[in-house]
Amino acid sequence: MYNLLYDGTFAGFLSALNRKLHQPALELCIKPVNGFEQDLYSNDFALTTDISLARKMLSLLKVHFSAEEIRHIKGILKQAAPGCEYFLCHYILNRLQQSAASSNEDKNNAAAA
Image 1 (cartoon, rainbow, N blue to C red):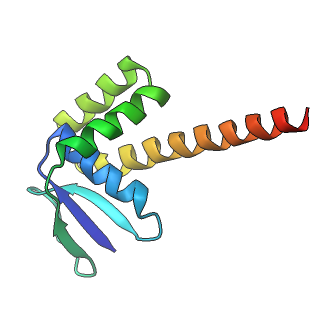
Image 2 (image 1 turned 120 degrees about the vertical axis):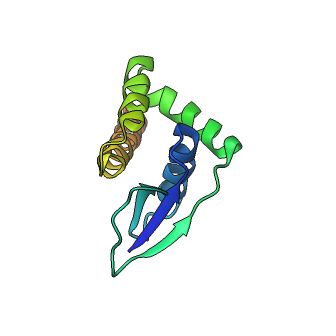
């Protein structure tokens, strides 16, 4: 297991989320740099916030989430409840996968018609 340690900002979270999205085979967990519990069996990697990647992720989120949902995600991250990154990450990635699957199904139905 690998922990991606981000700087606690929304842009940092989006950078880490982008990394997780593009490396699905790795077991990656997103955690803030400070205040995380040490895990004896994991490797920690401090992730540098990449503003251009964060903007791309935000653009992707805007396609699949309402502005209110994105504000809610930002609010949850600001509260920094322990483990919230884990749940947010899975929620977001599941939504993106469901949207992609539904889009592929629509294309297949259109091609069959």
